[in-house]
Length: 297
Image 1 (cartoon, rainbow, N blue to C red):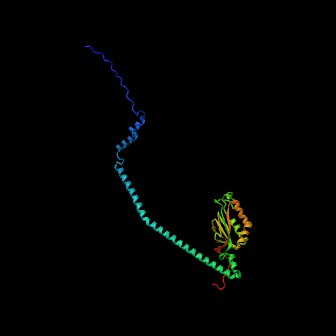
Image 2 (cartoon, one colour):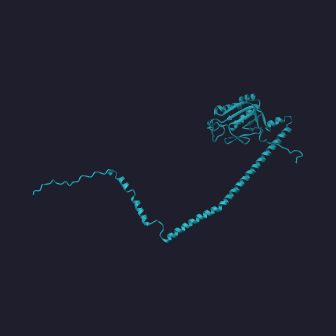
Image 3 (cartoon, rainbow, N blue to C red):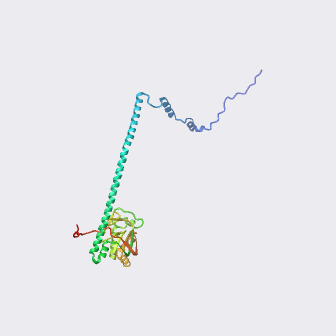
């Protein structure tokens, strides 16, 4: 029987198609091995070593002693805080009581000072009336011992817009004064002297009555009138013939000086004639000489 020859078998196999994620081997490795080998080894060692608590009796006793000591410290701290709390509260109450008592004492002293000041001012006014003769009212007016009202002038002086503090240098000496435009104490001195020279019978600044012994000074950037600080705007009231007072002041050297401050430094001011201005009495009069009353104890 003849055997038919068969075609040779092709043993070569066709190549497998490439995996879609073959180009992302690093990402595939990360996804398949999410836990790093080092972490895995550490976890295995921890599992073999147990919970990490001491195994020997000595270590357990040491741990227990440490826990007991910590508990004692916490307990003693809580007890100490509970014991000291009432003491602290008591000291606080005592301190508050001392402050309240001192405040009440200071208020009482201030009331006494004000009462004595009023009494002294009343006695001074009475003395002026008794010894002033026919000119008692004029003497009281000129000394500032009594309130006064009548026609006059209202002069408002204020710093330039955007004025700010400047450090160093005297009035008109600071390089930044042209930018700051602050009213200085000597400016107010010239304004007040100009009003006196123009015929003012009584003058006040921001409610502070001026007398022949009043002082206008500076403390830093603040203006003091008889040691009382003033803040801008400065309202200057003057009693007198309002028409003549206004004209004479603005034509005087001090009025021109105020105009120069406005033109060169931006200081603002306004002058208005008033039909009735009211000035308070001076807060205190200085007694230069005094004699005891005859027959007084």
